[in-house]
Length: 298
Image 1 (spheres, rainbow, N blue to C red):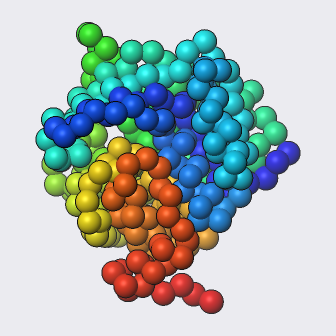
Image 2: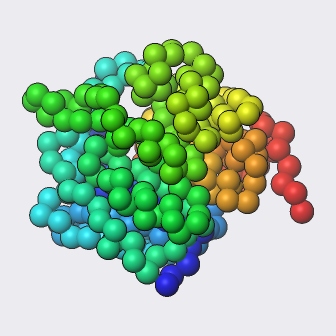
C-alpha cells in the first residue's frame, strides 16, 4: 500500500478555451490542476486519472514534478470546449464531445491517502461505489458537485440535471465543493452565503463555494469568506479545482478558517496566469502575510 497526503482523482480533459479575446487548446481536468497545487505545496501527491495513450504527455509532465500518477489507458480522452462569452468566469457554455468513461474501485487498490479530492467533469465519471470505497479508508473525501449535476444534452451542450443520489453523496463526503452557479441550481439561492448554508441543510458536512470574487466556506456551524486579490483573470479555467485542492491540502491538519485563507491565496496567484498553479510555497506564504494577515504556527 502506497501512502500519500492527497490523491487527486478525475479524468484528463483536452480543453478548448474560448474567450472574447482569444481561443486556445490546453491540458485540463480537476485532477491535473489539483495535483500541481498539492505537489508545489510540498505534499506527497498521487493522481488517479483516465486518458487516451495519445495524451500521456500529461502523465510524464506530472511525474516530472514528483507526482505519482496512476493512469488507466482508455480509447479516447474527455474533450471539453469552454466558451466564456463575457469576462465573468461564472458565465460560460460547455460542450463535451468525448469522455474517457467511468472510474472503477480497482483503480484505487494499493493507494491510501489522508485526503481524496474527487473532481469529475460529468455525471458517471466517478460513481457512488468509488466514493463508498474511498470513504471506508478513513481519510477525508472531497467531491466537486459539477461532476454529478452535469450531463450532456443536445449538440453536446453540457446541462444541469437533478441529482437523485445527492443525499447519499453528501453523507459520505467530508467536504462538498461547488461554485455560485451550481449552488444556485441545487438550492435556488443566488446569494453565495445563503447557498452554502442551504447545502449544509441538505446534508453536506462542510462546503467550499467559489465565485467571481472569492471563496465561501461553511463548516456546518460558521460561514466565512475570503476575497481573491488577483491582478488579472487570465487563469480563470481551473479556479475551482485549484481552490478545492489548496483548501484540502491544509484541511488535513488545519481548521476551516486557515484552509480558507490558503485557498484564497493560492487561487489569487493562479488566476493571474493560464494553466495550472505554478507558483512556489514561498510566494503563497508571502501573499498570506501581506494580504490576508495570516501567520503560520510554529
